[in-house]
Length: 294
Image (cartoon, rainbow, N blue to C red):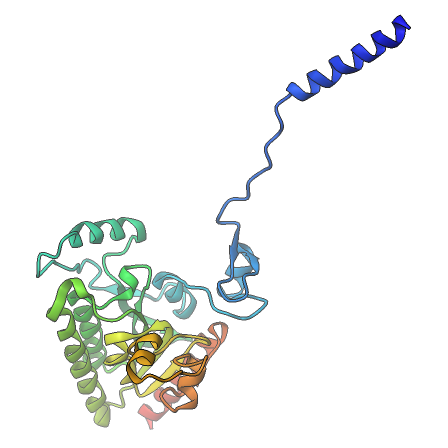
């Protein structure tokens, strides 16, 4: 009997020692290893995303990318030369908290403003390009954004080069008030001069719409290109869907303001998957060069 008690005691002692041992924590997967698709909610390995141009391999929905990543995808390596890199916004109306938010976003994104402009080559063909970035103030159009885009257009006109503008924006930047709204007219006028120069110089402007392109940007230069392309599933429109429904008191289609809906209505020329965008732009530029030579 004593042996039975001793055996039981020994087993309990072993159990207590085991219970006191710290339970090993499950290894956490770093945030940058997997990303969740906002469309189908599939977890995708970052390595797979990078190799697939940041497009979900399951539903083919494009992920949001930075302006520099888009430039990397579109422009031939080693050919991009940035222009107006140091241009920044001011605070014309002393809007509360605006300067602090600008500084915070500049540190977070490494950008000075919501657009990067410059010259480069696509498939060996030179062009001027401007790429907006929704990571910086939702790509909203400030005075600096409008000025950089205008200068890019004027540079293309001066150099007699085709122009490519990749758009993503929530619209005008409300913190800059009327100064922001003035950029709609300024950029549109510059694009009209570029288009008029094309009668003699054979100039071309291509707009690439990405998710989302809305507000004052969609109501100005984003809809004035000679050719308007779009990524799949991009939100394209002026006012929000709910605002329109509340105004007209009607239910709008589920796909309202998607690139597919806008293409059906004739507002854009073609939807091009991201992984084929460089090939498509190169093809259009080659047609333009042949036309200019002839």
